[in-house]
Image (tube, rainbow, N blue to C red):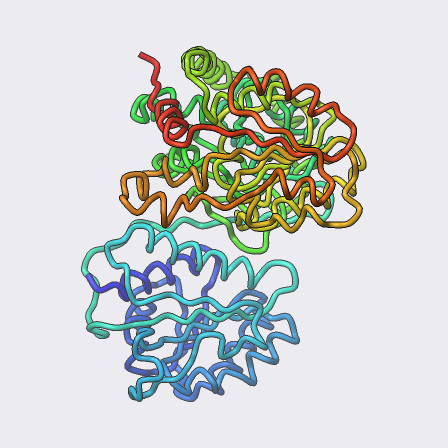
Length: 566
């Protein structure tokens, strides 16, 4: 099969699922696969117009009066530019148009190839969003998912909020006139629900009917602390058919075992967990730290429907199974959904013990992981366990990226303090400065736990003005990027220490003295136990350096993930 035939089919089927019924086509060679795909779909009413300028205005009229999106299809080159006047009119009239242009594969742009120009974003000033579908990936399931997601997002973008045109530029190569023989599976449609306040009661009741009695997993990524959301999530997760997976950075505390994400997922063999996979995943918050949770849900995506709650800048389909994008305040929506589902369960009873099943799985996982940590020597894992057990509920905790935030995730921190980390794009830069800014805003006890590499990257932050006396830093010194000793990509490379771990020159004691920070250093478990309580209580900004054996720490971490329930 040619890639372009598959991608064109996905495009057409997605747009039809979203209600597109009119298409205005202009003839051409490069857009032959698109025209073939259109011709084979009885759901579409086709209008063949030679002149692209007239075609676009005709599509505008169809959408204005028909009150639904119309699709435009053109070939490559200047054909697309002729759509400009009508697309601009549609933009300022708030009329949804789906502009689809055929293009040469990317490697032929600006190569003096016939009928070729820079088409992607050519209409960017007059469309809500521009999208590009590449000319490769025919056998790649991930690329087919990508095209499906782009098409869903384009339709949602065009029709939601203030409606308007969108542009999908699809690169086409190979045998352009070749028909595809085998049909593709039906395309997944992502629905959009929007509400400024409470969602319509009838809609919520229908959603509650859909989840009552089914296996539901509640997943929370990074979020700011929010007492209302915490109450709503706690109520929702108390339903007998719901299991919570709330990461450390979600700042949601819905149960003592809700944040032990990696502990339970690594305590069992993945094939043994398949039978416990959810039927519906309801997610809130940003990106997840846990690679294990993402992989687990992606592996079971064929049997999962995913509902994403909250305002997003685009269609985020992290688990490759998104079916509902719910643009509403998570606290309000979860409160409504919990109440409606509770009524259904009270009326009909609930025959699902999904939540209790996962509680038992977690209980067994906690035993085996806890026993492992009880019997390890001095290492990063041992040190982090001591530190997290000593942190009070009153403290604001900041974590740097890399191993630090992952250790917090592994240990499943249960205390009700706020946790922060720069997980938007997960860079190691600026961790110290961010924490100091947070300490100034909070005005109370603030602790940053960072690695030595992240500390070295932002060491200039020690000189920032107005650092409050409530600010504390714990620097985990494992001689550079410890994560590179753990991950399979780099752990066995002979260049690992020099080129990846790259132990920084970090004269912390001298820097602390120069910038007026109290400084202490520990090298053993006993030293940490002796110093940590007084360090955290001491008045004045302070730095504690915790030195751990790098190679042994990496082996301990690998062993933790290998530790399974027999």
